[in-house]
Amino acid sequence: MKHWTALILAALLAACTGVPTVQRPDSLYNDRLFSAPSTPIGDGDIFALSDGMRNYLNSDVSAQMRGKDRQHALYDALYSNSQLKLEYDSTITRNAAQAFEARTGNCLSLVILTSALAKQLGLSVQYQSVFSNQTMSRSGDLIYYSSHVNLALGNHETEGKIVFQAKQPMTIDFLPPEELAGQRSRAIRESTIVAMYLNNRAAETLGEGRLDDAYWWARKAIERDPTFLSSYNTLGVIYLRHGNLKEAERILKYIVGLEPGNPNPISNLVVVLEKLGRAEESGRWSATLRKLQVNPPFYFFDLGMSAMQEHDYRLARDMFAKELDRAAYYHEFHAALAAAYLGLGDAEQARKHLLIAIENSTTRADHDLYTAKLAAITPKTQSLLAPETP
Image (cartoon, rainbow, N blue to C red; front, side, top):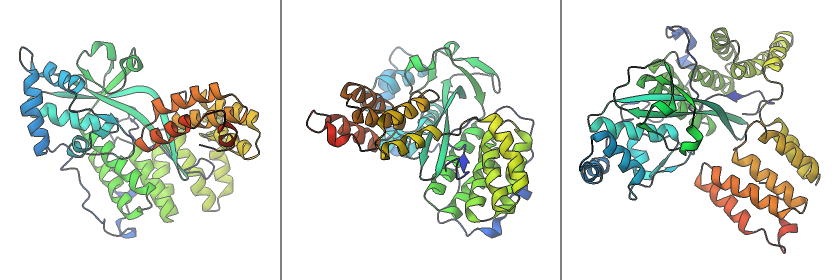
């Protein structure tokens, strides 16, 4: 959802900050507004092992155990075994068995998969929310914010405390080590990981327009961990999309009361109040939002895309560069900047940014698209590609 259509969803893997114990607010639900889910909504299979996973443990991981403890055997199998070949892909959040079968997943899916394998080996796991800049992506008029999670193998009685990545030698993470160097993380409960999974499924079904299913996924996420506030924001957006403005207002104000400095629910609240015809109140919240968020997400990107349509490639370049100033590795911004450089006749810079887009793409489809664009940059085709937006 765009900020400018006022739907900002802090959904995918966003780690909540420490808040007081929260009682589940049943008054925020309104089940009668939604039809029964089309598929069972639950979390019983999140960590379930498939036959293929058991075979992997019995063969590949067991082979790593010669002269090693179980922690190092699993660590080496995950990072060194050429047969597993896990690949990062943000398209959908998978449970453990699905991630193993597909050999792909977002960071949450890969954490769930690793946890399932570790627990089968009798290892304890500690889930960790990594303090890093949230990444954002957009699908239609939805904007998604994503944070990062990983896990450490062994006994760590550190729940809720902040730890340094460098002091966790058995941390399992599928990001390059240089991206984790010096970063802090906060230990979180397994119930929060489960809530993140359920909330991701809510966000993904919301993006598909399946509002009834999205409602039940978000509701279940809140039940699993009432302190994971991103689920409430998701539910507020679902109410908004479903036309239940009073319900949306109630739940969004509930979150704002707990996190008054969080711009995401405030952005959604502004839209709800506008739709309710309460312009004065909406204006007050807009003023609060402007103090928290000088320029909304994708603001400069959209200005750049408008400039591309006008063939003003210099302005487009400058606007895309401004977005990269606050999201240095978001692939879509680099691909857009490459198109602007093509328009300016600078093939070298276009190639440079397409390579960055390829390296940081989070789906196979995006990777293939950028690779094709890179291959198409030749002196003969350069002028034809220039007006094309990524």
